Length: 342
Image 1 (cartoon, helix red, strand yellow):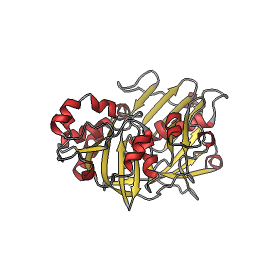
Image 2 (cartoon, one colour):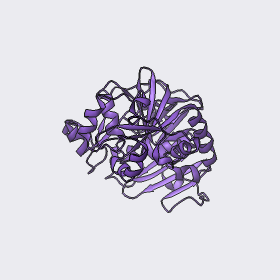
Image 3 (cartoon, rainbow, N blue to C red):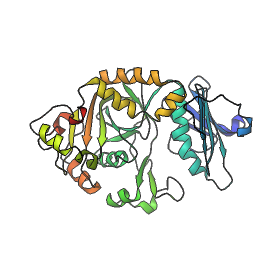
Image 4 (cartoon, helix red, strand yellow):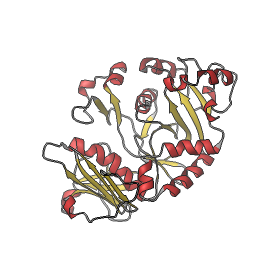
């Protein structure tokens, strides 16, 4: 791939300048590319030309890793490689694979692996900004981060980064992917015209919301609070404990937040929500993850956030709540730490 080809598409994300031979609408467009240590090159190449590696014990048949080299094989999609913290290579499985399907993994798994190689703290979360301060929503893929983020966006919050979020040593959240992904059911309940939204992947009923339909922030912002999302049905498993400690916390229609006071528990929550923990282990970066997460929990409060079941109900109750002030979300007559810390 010639330099002229991969310089056709220029982007910026996570403080990096990204030159790509494939269009990446999830990232902010850059005007020009400048060679330097913060430049990342994404380009097609034949996997037959990739040098053999002695993969770490944390590798799998489809995922091969050493400290400066990461490789992923996805049947029916293609092969991906991130190496030296500067290069992402890819090969299409066959001609039937669309650029749309390829870029789903280029800007998530591959870019996330490269960020880990560069020494960043990369978390599985979505960051939004209001009044110059950022909040971070952490949670599993089924926890409702994007749905909550869209509801907050309707209340004046702006997107800073979605899916994977990078926080630097000063507690600043770096602007990243500018896209929210909503499943069909959520899009329906939010009364979005999903037929006009681009599909995230072929044959997957998940839709992308991109600028200009999405208000975004393109500068680093100080992180003010971290919320770990809890699905209401998971919360109800501990209902008796909650009733004993937190009056009102078992209300299925409520939004409740508890500060995670013990730093060790907060640290474990961040570690568990690291972007692909196996990547950290396989590339020898797990100690780095602990050090960075420990520094972050000393700087920023971590709260558990329980949301009501149902998109419409969540949207309704959010109108009377402020996620800027986690204390206001504490259950009645209590500001104790999360009952799940025991």
